[in-house]
Image (cartoon, rainbow, N blue to C red; front, side):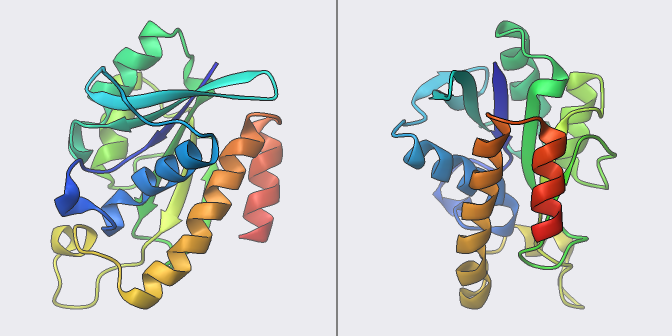
Amino acid sequence: MKLIVGLGNPGSRYERTRHNIGFEVIDELASRNGVKLNESKFNGLFANIHKNGEKAILLKPLTYMNLSGESIRPLADYYKIPAENVLVIYDDLDLPVGKIRLRQKGSAGGHNGMKSTIQHLGTSEFNRIRIGINRPPEGIAVPDYVLARFTGDEWDKMQSVIQTCADACEEWLEKPFLEVMNRFNSNG
């Protein structure tokens, strides 16, 4: 069993904001697989999907970004999902808008949702998809920037990025993450 987590903040106030791009990918995966995230436990919304004999859980933590690990860890423990079978999707200020980067491990890079995830899982060795949102323009504070909605042009670009990330997640249900990483990083 695998766990695919999109990081974000709950509530309509945060929909389509830069910080919620992980939620958008989870919503796309749920839509593609004909499921609704209506299981509510472990401080999150989740649903099960099945692809080519592989079972996966899609999770949107409802803890708010900075406490994401408080949802991820209990769910992973309950379903006995090891860290190497966890994939976390999140926004990254250090990548240009729309650029994606897949990694098997790494630091939090200043991302509070990832800090919480690493802290609660007790390891940084889990899969991740980083989605570029770029740095804020001069004079705009990082919290204000990440909690703001994408501009029209950015959102248009993100529609394609969401599809690509969902493709990578589905491919991971069939192939080793290293293979998926090599393919999507070379195309990204």
